[in-house]
Length: 123
Image 1 (cartoon, rainbow, N blue to C red):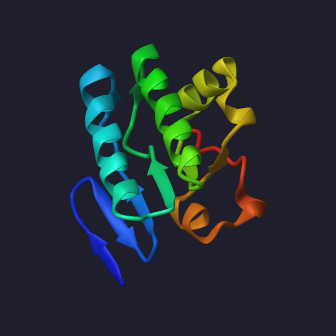
Image 2 (image 1 turned 90 degrees about the vertical axis):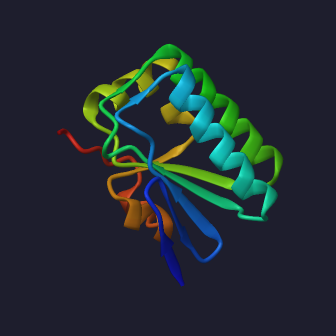
């Protein structure tokens, strides 16, 4: 069963989070709180779809690193999708691309399509 809301969607035991256009301290905190609430409810797979995110600042990256650690501490899996090239480049510079699977689409991430991992949108 799929439940779709404005900034998240539930698909079975997976939650897809849709961050805003700009991830900074305030938006990052909102994203982290939403992720934590799903982990506390027992969700083990978190997909963050960045297709509507144009920019992630250094504080936003720091928040995302904390989220990755929190999900992994709970034996969960966190995946990224829909990254624009500029955000992929930032993640690459800080080394996140070595530690997380990145998919072109949220559907690929939900399905765990490893053939699509590493793909990046160039919009």
